Image (cartoon, rainbow, N blue to C red; front, side, top):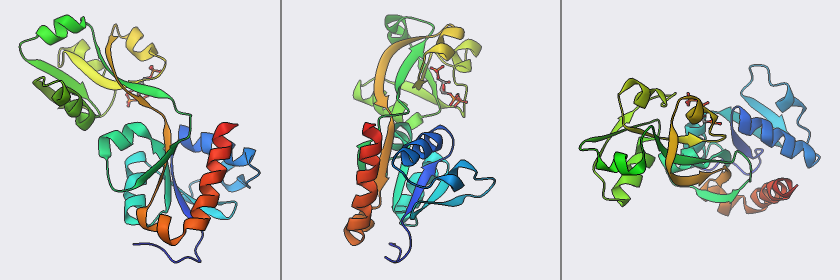
Length: 213
Ligand code: PRP
């Protein structure tokens, strides 16, 4: 589906840190972000001539894929885990962190385990990583604080996001291999890039300028 050309472009924005970064970026480009600065409990908010839809990261992909939002802003972590049919336009340069394999043991000891168990909130990313290495690993899906799994004896290692490294350090874990870099990305609906090209390009250029500041 693509929405009618008269309607303002809708941008699905990941709630939380990315939303705050984008509000700053837009404001720096002279866009009126007063509604975004005081959203209350509203989930669709005007900013400049556009509309922001505040959503959870995986839903940003769903809205963009289905064309109910023309554009979306989310972390590369969700893109790698969820995949989908959309254009990934560019790296906004913030929200920088990485996917890593971490454990309380060395890489050699982990690889030497007879039955390797790895906990992650990102089972798809973890599975792909081990498949590429042709390593047989049992993936255990958790919903958060995956650092608990090795501490509780549920897993030998974790595949998780590392930003400052503080959570790993404070729980006695160490990165044993980096998997992939992560940062915020701008994505677009495939149909809208054809039917609303000019408006889309205007928004994309603004994001490009803002991300270089
Ligand atoms: C993320 C991630 C790590 C932590 C890494 O968790 O899963 O636990 O941040 O950050 P650091 O390297 O700066 O310590 P988040 O806070 O999103 O919570 P969650 O574990 O419940 O998903």
